[in-house]
Image (cartoon, chains in turn blue, brown):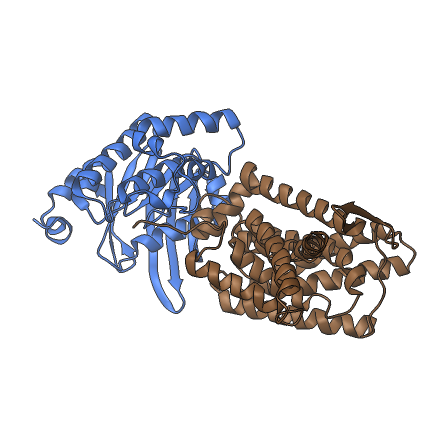
Length: 236
Length: 296
């Protein structure tokens, strides 16, 4: 059984159907990417999984049915999300952002150790730990978003367009760090990304999503070599 | 000199009420980002509830504690029944709910207890000789009690926001509700808690103010205006700022009203607003408010 299993997921905003039966799985420790054009339903898929919008269908996380769960229940079952636009809690300091990320935990020592760990991973956050998070640069806010999400000690991390607004160099750094997180903590990551080259570079498998439906997954290397995928998403 | 001291103490007497009510406004704002226009009426209604308990023979201190509990329950009910169903993006609707609750509580109190002013007992002795002499000025026991309680409430609110996990969750929920949900924070509960706190603070304030204003349905009208001014002046997200600003406004209006003859007692309210405008022109987020900064 996979860590995340999605069968026939439907979601809509008002009268507009956005997802028409998504099927998708993510195994433990696996990095999976969803590729697709603007408006194909990538972000909606993310929000449907984390319970931020109404949805129909079957979604299980580690064997628990989360298809009707509220966002806070989903987090408690081991899912964390880096939302599109980074979700910075601007009025809190950098350190408070991390502390807020550990809201569902109560092991004080473990939380302190994890904060130290993320400051270690991203020294630039450490330098600014007492600053309001709203003052961070885009790249720093993205590092903060990843660390904050990881503070809940999830089994699965959803990342929605983490490269948005970042320079190629910062994007590269971010993907290297995501890849390292996945390896070191055998952490599953489900990634939605416009930057297909980078995403396929660290992913094990990839799905193509088109207007609310999804094709069978294929190995990342195969997708990266496919001419049609290259033309549509990789641009060369 | 004696007159100056007397006027300062007089100003503090009113200022402590502005500060108390402003603190309640800040409590709601810090947990929900809304201005609760019904805050004064919640305090007024609590005072009537305390009055009903004293009529039933409950000692006044316990009657006030019961009013605090009733205020807390009332605040929670308002959130659950009237505010929550409107959803997250209903800023103006919630402002209107505040006006609706304002009118309902005001009319309700009039309906139940009538329009005649009622006498409400002081908690502490309040005879002609019951005061502390401060440099010749008279600080009455009841006023002193309110200042002590205000200090205690302020200290607890400050500690809650600054040092507790719950306070951090409350600040997260107001700063970025979407992110708060994704971190497992139950934002609805946080909002409810803000209203419960506001109701409780109102429940404490109403019965303490009632002896000096007499108990009427309009006892809190002008205080709410002053308190809004104090909260704005101090910075809507700063409990300490709201309290300091409330005291400043109280003292300043007393001094200006006393020394500037054409202002007298009629134009006192204008003094508060001139001060407010002057400060906001220089510092739009208020004296102690935090400026919202965000790089993108």
